[in-house]
Length: 443
Image 1 (cartoon, rainbow, N blue to C red):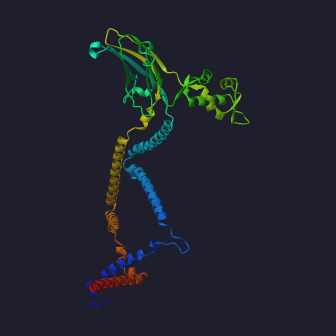
Image 2 (cartoon, rainbow, N blue to C red):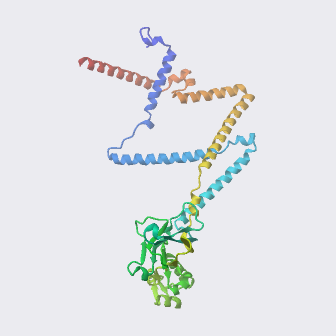
Image 3 (cartoon, rainbow, N blue to C red):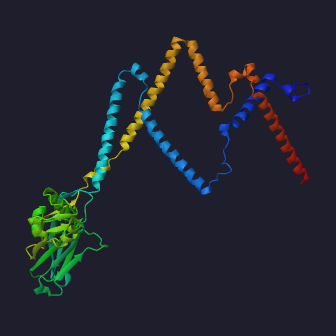
C-alpha cells in the first residue's frame, strides 16, 4: 500500500523494495531443502545419546586429522614459488632444485631413522676396557688407638664420557676373601650381592684392624644384560665363543643345523643330529622345541674375575694396584643420532616461509601494476569488482546490488511467497509483543 496514511511513504519505493527483497531472500534461503534438518522415519529407531556422542567424537577426530593434513599441505605449498616467478627471475630455478633435493634428503633421513629405531629394539653391544684400581691405606696406632688397614676398590671405563657410569653397575656380586689364618674362618669373607633395591656406588671399601701383610682374593662377577653363560667345551667349538647369551647360542646352533641340512625332511619339527651334535646332546634325534631345555646342562654361570692381591705396608702410607678387564656394554651411538636437535631447522623453515610469502606478494603487485600500465581502465574496473566481492564477504552482505538495480529482479516467481512470509513473521512478532504486554498487565 502506498497511500499517504502509511508510514512507508517516508522512504522511496525503490529503497523499501530493495531492503524488503533482501530480507525475503535471506528468509527464503534459510528454508531451502539443503538447510533443513532430517529426522529418522517412523520405522527407524532414533539413536541413543551415547551413540550420538561417539559419532561426534569420530567426526571431531576426522576433522582434526583433516586439519593436520591441511597444515602439512599448506606448509608444502608455502615453500613453492608461483610459476610467474620463473619469468621474472630465472634464478629461482636453483631454489626449486634445492627444494627437490631437500625432499629426497628428508625421505632418506626418515627411512634411515625408522631403520635405526628398529635396530634399537636389539641394541648392539661393544667391548670396552674396564679399569679397576685397588688402594691400600694404613692408619698408625697413635691416630686411631689401634693399627688398621683399609682397602678401596674403584674404577671405570678408560674412554668413558659424561655422564659417568657408577662402578658397582658393572658387577653382579663382589667377594673379598681374606687370610682365614689371621681373621678366622667366620670373619674372613666380605661379600656384596646385587638386589632389586641396590643403590649404585662409585666403589667399595673394607677396613680391618692389624698391620701385618695380608693376602686376599677378590672375586668380581660381571653384571651382563642379557645374562651371559659359560658354554660347554664341545658346544663352544660350534658357537665360537667361551661365553655368550642363550639367544646367541640358539641362533648359532640353528645356523649350524640349516647349513648342514639336519632338519628332518618328513617332519620339520625334528632335528637329525650328526656325529658332532650326537656327542654334544647325547641323542640321535631331538625336537627343535627341546633345544632350550637341553641347553640347561650345557650352560653354566660364567667364571668370575679373580684378582690376587697382597696388602703390604710399604714405605709410604698408601699403595695402588691397577688392573684392566674387557667388558661388554650397550652402544648408545644410535640413540644419540635420534636425539638430534631440529630447533635450528624449524627456524630456517620459518625464514623460508617468510621469504616465499614476500615473493608471492611482490608477484601480485607486479601483475597488478603490469596490467595497469597496459590498460588502466580495464585494470581499475577489475580491481573494483574484486574489492566489491571481498567487501560482501567481509560484511556478510546478502544479495547482488547490480541485479537489484533492474526491475526484472522483482518479478521473479518467489517474490509473492517472500512477501507473504515477511508479513506473516511481522504479524507473529506483533502478536508476541501484545501477549507479553497483556501478561505483564495482569500481574
